[in-house]
Length: 529
Image 1 (tube, rainbow, N blue to C red):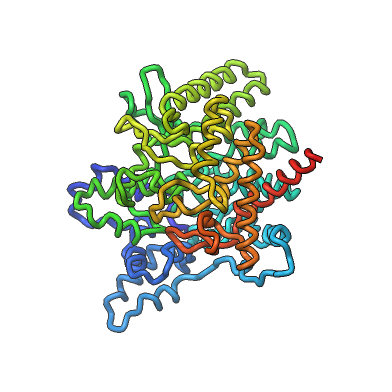
Image 2: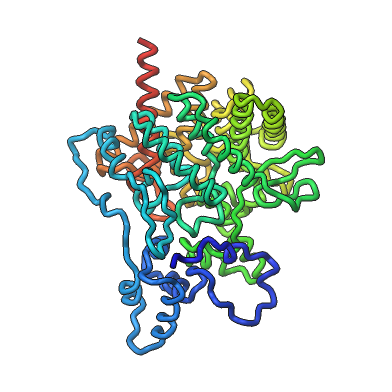
């Protein structure tokens, strides 16, 4: 019997439902069991994600009963119990020797097949959500498909001439929308309370570069994703929020925030989340912190001072913030749905979506453009002011052509004068110790900024960023034989960046952006000649 993980009762705990509970509740999911909590708190594994990705040999109710009967017996060994009752089905195929005679780009071509998975077969009791078609995983600890990672992987696959594999990945996401109602953070059941930055429409548009009218094939799924991010029935006042939606004024104008439906520690980071909340004595405050941590994970920027109210990690307040990147992506989704409706001959629907993306653009320029900084900035709708954090999310409006010419010039200047380092663009200007902050650089953010600069004709600046980034990639590859998840763009003597977990290699989106940048540079050089 498969775990009853799809039931979201564990994660939909409200602020009021935890009060006045006097009797012990029977666990309804594995993540509520004493076995799960005891293993995670015992730190049997360096990475908390390791345990939730193991495959139990029996259903969680049977395992819990077996554990409770044995745990107080003399000589009981928790690690031995786990070893006897769980299986490790991780990606052994990634354990291979790098051919040092190959260039970085030749290595990436080999890695596509090493990182390819699927179609999946259902594994009893596994946390994995099986997919019907082939796909590429990021690598390292990430042994399932991840949502926003996959857009940048797809761009690399298309640049490598692997259109069929790219389309299979889009079809898998279409399957997830149809079967779950949205695309989860990743294909594990413990991710089913949240999505990630909605790049699905960009994936569809990327396929359209080779074959036109692809949006028409996926318009139903894009509409469902849009409904997921726009769902709300509770908002009655301005500057209040429900789910992903924030009401900005009385004229039915909305912006969006990141939001996870859970108010408990993340299963894949259980002990870390508990530790962070240990100084809080109020249970409601703890639940809110867990919700904000989960919501930051939906953003993909887990974690960053971008979400902090104060100086440290425990002040994370993601759900109070209207983010630039999310609203850019939803602007694009509205625009894509408008164009698809026009192609289908539904002019009324096309006009409704045109009205929505025009309103969103006006609101973004009202609340998210910061004239003093010359950059787009996240907005705190609770304090009614910008967060004050300059981040590479502020470059997203270039990619989506939201900025006017004067704004674009200012954004370009900020990128080149403040964000550009020896190895590429730094994620934020704050060195907090979090992985989505300085001194780290990430491939997806290089891509969004570079493509945005090219759209506005800033070729020289775009080329400089690409060349610095690729030079760093090649240097690290030469020293390690690996492509990394992230890089330290400020200190080029280091192999890679740091953060919440150990540096991962593989690596899907780094591979995709490297191949994509090489293609862009080759095309620009060819144009010059």
